[in-house]
Image 1 (tube, rainbow, N blue to C red):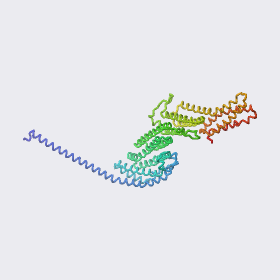
Image 2: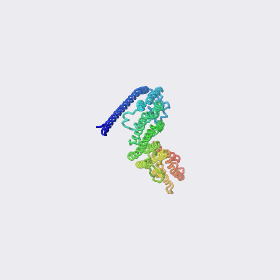
Image 3: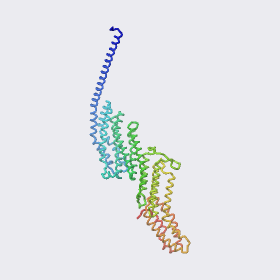
Image 4: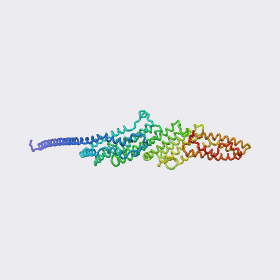
Amino acid sequence: MDSNSPEAVQVNSGSQMDVDSQEQEEDMQVDSEEAVQQANSESQEAKTDIALIMPKLTAYINVIRTNNSTVIDAIHNYLGQYLRSEEIDDLDFKEHISIDASNSVINAIHPDMIDNLHEAVMMMLEAGFDRECCNEYSKFRTNCLGSYLSYMKTLQPQLGFEENAKKGTKFFNHEIREWTKVSNVIVRVLLPSERTLCQRAFLRYTEAKNLALMEVCRPLLISILDSAVKHAVELARSNKIEYFSRISRVVKAFHDLMPEIESLFPGPEPLGDLIRNEVINTRKKLGKATMDILERLEDWIYKENEMASFYGGLYPIISWDVMNCLGEICEAWTVIGLEKVLEEIPMVSDGEGTAPCSSFSIQFNRIIEMLNSHVEIESKKYTDPAEGYIFMMNSQRYIQQKIIDCQSKMSTILLMANGAIDENNAKARQNLEDYRQSSWDEVLGLLKQGNRDERNEVESMKENLKLFNVQFKEICRVQSTWFVLDEELRKEIRETIEEILLPSYGTFIGKFQKVLGSDADRYIEYSMYDIDALLNDLFRGGN
């Protein structure tokens, strides 16, 4: 075949293309192998760099870790008394802890140790090992914080096995008090120290500092917030009114910590946003627990069959317990700002076409109505109707006072409409009138008898005065043992009696003396002064 023929040219061209393609594949394979070798080399170099730098960071970390005993001594010296105390009821950290105590942890770490730590951290960060540095730092500080908390637990009072098992009043009081104290120390002492240490270790490396601080602080803060919710939920589920009212202690402790947390982690740094979201969620959960307690309070009143009382059997404990619990719930509502948090609560008309009220107000009114009905039923069990009316008046007065107290806390919500308040006041006045009639109408009738113009007027007046003396003496003997707790109510009842009794008795005695002359003194047992003095001794619970 002629080499210049078309067929020969085509064959030669194909052979050349195959050769060129093979050479390109070989060049690509060489380039790929060189890239792998370069990557392996760089990886090995990086490993070599971190292997050189990490031991230095670890060494400085260990120096600070060995200093933990000094930090623990500082905790013991400055915080030991606060943590051990069982007498602190207000749990006001600032009243019991000095400024030196707040700085005790960070001051217990020598500045040279912090400078060395900073030097090692800078080497890690400048070499590009941000993640490795943050991991090592956060692991180190988390372990230290764990040791501090473990030591703090040994300082706190411990309940016995029996008290823990019973989960009674002492258990809940203990749990809430100790949680509050530990939370105060964490938020006001440990975390500020951690923030200061982290700032001094990382300085200008803001992103790495925020990451390390988040990994150290966030678990502790979440633990505090979760414990607050846990205690609130346990109280709500207890179904015991003596535990319900403790919700306000949890809410107040949570509320008191919030400004400190916000100042520690301000926005717009990522940790600040994360913590704010956690706080908002916790506030909502505490709000839900508070509303659950309100619902369970209704169930508790409905199921309460035994009406215990005190102060001579005339003061229903249920009124005291329920209204105190409502007061604590209102306190929690106000402190936590539930009207803003629980925006999903439906708003309904209050029935009078005026300002709207929330379901909280509806439940509040329903509980008051249930309580009044419960007490009224119980009052009818007294054999002496007058005693039942005093029982009712004691309860009504305390309920009225606590409603006023609750309303003063709920500035943005009308708890009871004016119509409902007027109705309650009318019932209280009616009970007072019923008491007067049942106790004193018969006695007053004896005095009215003396005003009639009868043939045997003198003998009739003598007999009526004799009966009056007996009945008045017996009423005073009995009712002086009854107890009216509220001094103003006690005064109102006495004045009601005086207004009708003293004029009638004065008129009767005046006419009696006019009819009998000097012989009247033989029959008159009580002077006006004596009557007034005996009335003044009523409802003081004397024996």
